[in-house]
Image 1: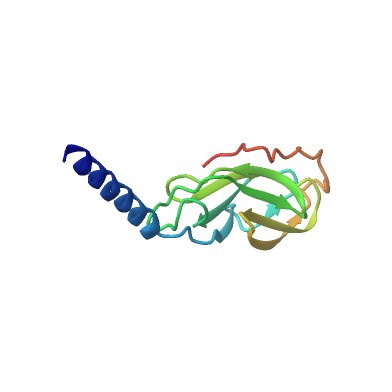
Image 2: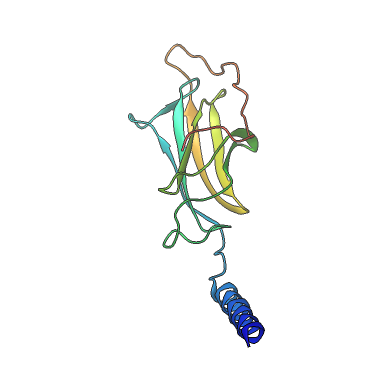
Length: 146
């Protein structure tokens, strides 16, 4: 009788575990929902340092509504070159510093798990006529601030 009760209890435990596993919500698709740049005077100058920030949701850990912490990192790029990578915070935002090294049009991109958001900005020369500065190498190995 004791053996039968233990066997029945084990079967119920396995069935309950399977029901919990089957009822877990699937992970939502990752999405970069916003990409912005922080500057105060309306003009981006070559050699200036500006904060690029992105807001991401979903991915391997669920949606922003259920769990805003996003694993992995948001990769930031300038015209296809790495600017940096930042892991989103609990508020789902990530940011890196960007210093444009040449004047002209820059396509800035934030990518998270295949989702991408792009903005295009124009960088102007400094007042003294400087049109380029030494490039700062990007680090796409997980640095940046959240």
